Every structure is written in structure tokens, then in C-alpha cells.
Length: 153
Image 1 (tube, one colour):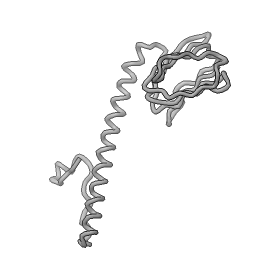
Image 2 (tube, one colour):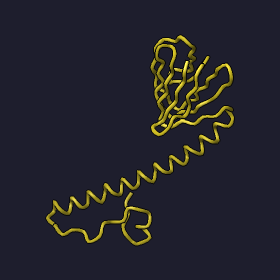
Image 3 (cartoon, rainbow, N blue to C red):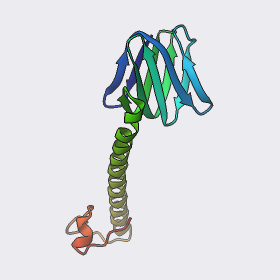
Image 4 (cartoon, rainbow, N blue to C red):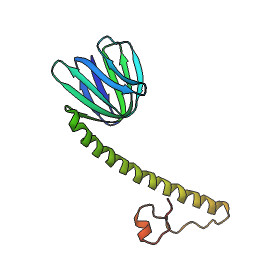
């Protein structure tokens, strides 16, 4: 069997001659061996463990879809994934990456919210008949508060 784990930006794991894969979905833990029937499941945050004749490995996935095709190929498409040969090393690496990603998502979400509010305010001005354009666009970053501009969010 072949195991391929991908995220939107990279191939995290691509291993041939797989003898066994173990994963967990919302219904519980399950195993896959060569010749397994076609199968599709949604994975929550889950550790996928695999073994071939030479070595074993672990991949932590941050939500994804696992499919088995023809009993010879296992594909996992995940939102995020991290791999390690040793399970104990997987936790700290993945936790650090998850925290960084969450911080980036928070910053993006706040910027989008501020942009949305600025757009709504401009539409309100136009609807109320105030056709005077705003001289400068409102600042959307954290510097806006330091400059004295009103920041919502």
C-alpha cells in the first residue's frame, strides 16, 4: 500500500510498501491493511501511525479526509499535518506550529473584521446622502489605536 498525506501547501508524507495504518475518526480507532475495502472517513485532530518493513512513522493531522482506494492506496487530505518518526517528538513540534497558525488566523480575522466595519460605515454615509469621500482611509492595523483612530473589533 501507499500512504500519501497532503495539506493545501505541501506533501507531508509519501510512503510505499505500507503494512499497516492506524488512525482515529469520530467513531473510534481503526486499522487499515493491504486489501482493505474502499473507505472514506472524516478525521478530527488525529494521529495517523503507519508501519512498513523498514520503519514506522506518525503524522498528526488537523482535521482532514482519509480515503482508501482499491486496497492499495491511502490518501489523507488535511488542513494541517506534521510528521515525526518518534511519537513523543510529534507533540511539541505540532503544538508550536498550531499556536503560530492560530495567532496568524486571529490577526487575519481581526483585520477582516475592521475592513468589514469600515466598508459598512462608508456605505452608511453614502445611503444617508453624505457623498463626501473620506479624506483618508481608516487604518486597519494595530497602529490605528496608537494614532488615535477609533478601532472596533
